[in-house]
Length: 518
Image (cartoon, helix red, strand yellow):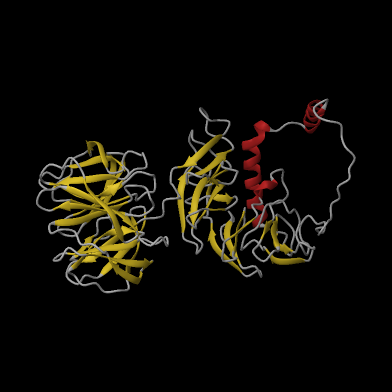
């Protein structure tokens, strides 16, 4: 009984919010008739046929197969079609089913409210969100209501119907029909994005009670990304679409009074095509390698790399030398100058190879970037005496050409790393003045220097810039610093301007230094 009460609160809230767009049925019918007069060619005879594969049993609540299959069907890897119903089943709270193309129907799961469920019939059936299948065959979906707190669930299911609840949306505080909580209420359709995670929206809940946007990993790690409720939109009732640019796009049904009160189209400013970053470390004394897996500036885990390295071989940076999609690690011998690559599979070094040429004495490999846009990472060098820069253009692990960059940077300016600071798609070069802490960028076009700019503000010289990474995946290169105590901070950048910065929540053990990244 309590479950049905919570559903009705949701239904009445939605109806109040959308009542401004409703029209009497007779007006809709009249309008449809006017639009159809003379609007198209004469109707043709009905020659096509339809085969009915399954008819759901008529029932307002309980039945054996479900009631109200409003969500879209998906075809699984096994060829069967999978779907959900909003109502019906043993407990009247909806079902998950599969049906073969020839009509063999199998009930996989009947929701009982504790694991999720849908509301009583109402005029908004599109909230039955359907299912999404991952490459391993698992099915993922949401329920609009039910769960531990009555405000919906996110679940995972095997093709044979074994269910795991990944997330139950939090208990809300309700004021005048709005629902406020920490993560959202009444979720819609999940979208599987190119980064392998799911993204979705809730119609209500969050800090303002008017919807949220969230991320959840396939194993259930949940993150709230945005709370709706300002002029940028409220009540996101549709799903999300990933654009070719790697951003997520969606719509809201309305907004607060003012601009956008009739709804909005929005973009989540996280480029999913940019993978979550990690920070690579090397222990100066032992040569051992490890990395931090990051979520923005938050350290998710510390992971040793399953191979020992001679401390004479110093890590330079990471790039994919063999084209398998995993970043490999370039090393340089501090004594001989010789270069070598570890081919990586996540944390495992699967093989290694020496670079066929050795740079002249005094030339230190400082960064990796694809300067000539041929798909192979190239190697940037700096002369430790003169500061002069040079590039080896590479084909895999084979140098194909070499050239000096002009002009030479002024004395005291050391390369930090490479990334695109001006948004033209070309790798630029970041420097730091060892004496003043000032940072500067050379804007590049291939191997030519187009111009330069200082980074603002000026950094304290005790903080050495050690890596360039897009920590928050907004398409702008961010800067990581480390001081002599090992402590680390970051600047989140907009072009050449630091917008904000903070300490990392974790300090690496003594002797572990960040490896400058490409």
